[in-house]
Length: 191
Image 1 (tube, one colour):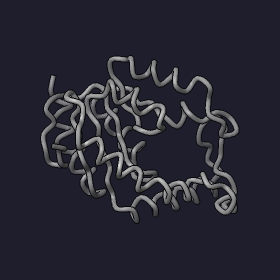
Image 2: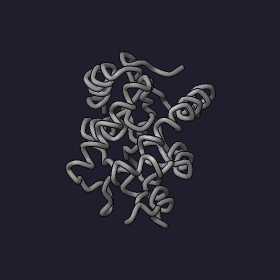
Image 3: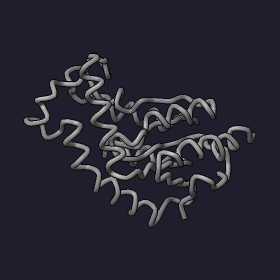
Image 4: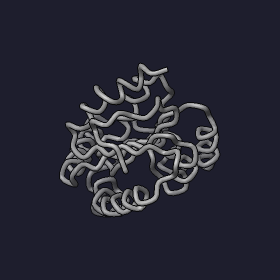
C-alpha cells in the first residue's frame, strides 16, 4: 500500500527515485530530497541528452554506475533506465498531479526556456516553438502522449511493488510541500 503525504517513512532512504509525468516537478522535488537527506542528486536528462539532443551512447552505462552507488537521488524516467534504477531504489516518490497541472507547467517552462534561451543539457536549448507542429517528441506533444502511460506504469508498479521499495504518492502540488516538511524532514533526522 503506497504511503500518502502524511505517512511517516519506515526508514531514512538512501536511493530515491522521483516519478511522474513531464512537468510534474520530478527534478525540483529530487533536488529538495537530495538536499534534505544530504544525498547526491543526478539529473537523468543530463546523462541522457548529448549535444544536438542525440542520446549519449554511454547513458545506460552511466545509469548502471549511478545505481551501483550506495546513495543517490534521481528521476525515474527513460524505459532503459527504469529497471536498472528500480532494482536498487528503496524509495519511489510518485507525483500524480492532475493532467492540467503538469501540462500547464510544461507549457510555461518551455516558453520561459525558449524566450530566455536557457541552456538545458550539454549545449541544448529549447527548439523554436513552431517545432510543436513538426516534432512528435516536442515536449508539449510528448506530455499529451505520455501522461496516460505514466499513470498505467504507476498502477502496475503499485499493484506488485518490490518488497524493499517504499512508495509515496503525492497527488496535488500542496502534498509535495507537506510531505517535504513532514515525513521527509522527519526521516532526515533519523540515523
